[in-house]
Length: 116
Length: 229
Image (cartoon, rainbow over all chains, first blue to last red; front, side, top):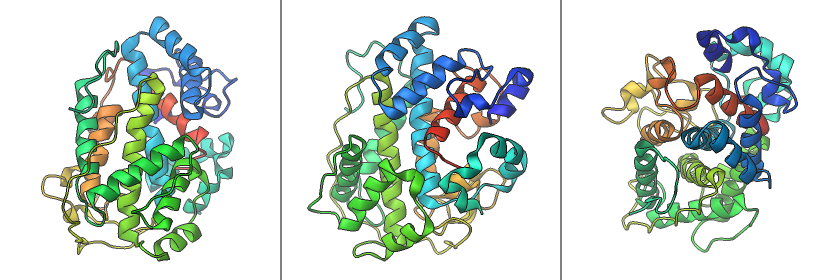
């Protein structure tokens, strides 16, 4: 989805998917480091969360902060549906992402067995 | 009324609020296999688990409590063997498991929204009275995921479009369909927190952050959870 959205917005050339698995890597998405740091602090409930909230509200805006929180909330749900039901990858997703999954090390996740 | 967001100086979207209220109503009502009181209890156990509190329950089977806790704090290590063990334990079936997962993940999602914004958690709803309907869709079929799912024809009236052109829906959308109401629930809270299924196919602008920013956050959350899907 990230690759597809970057393609649509004409920013695919600057996209670095390593930014999704490595917090020290610039994803190439505008304010990406701030947003992924926020996501990580929210998922892990770290002490960095209040400061990151403030930065997003100040640098991007309060609606951006609320929307970012919604995305975190949604995917905390979706990953558990996937993990809890052992769903395999859809064929169209597998075909579109097989190359980058290898590159990002996603095949190493325990849940990869559900698609084996 | 729940989710008033009194004193909150943030622009919470109306759709977010309405979908969260709907979720609380759904959790409080009897389902197909659990009573309203049991469903609220499932949400309570899940909420405590997120804070690493392993609380017990006087009304849920032990296996249900364990399953809730595992789903919340150790979801990356679930596997088919574990699932088979859980549904074979006293008080559990695959139908009850699917309903439990739906309650856990939707309640968790709403709590996570609050936690991410530094807001107090909404008090859990008061359970409604009544008995579960105990109805399994006749169309349910074992496919690729662990629990059976239902095809488009087994969904509730008006919900068939939620599968798009696919007879069995995308895997994550049909995953909880053994309880057909879950497909609508999944959609409505998606729209409240992320995007509706229709919006997922539309170009920017959809929200205050761009679609690339949305999907970057989504991918990071998935990676942090070591979710292959």
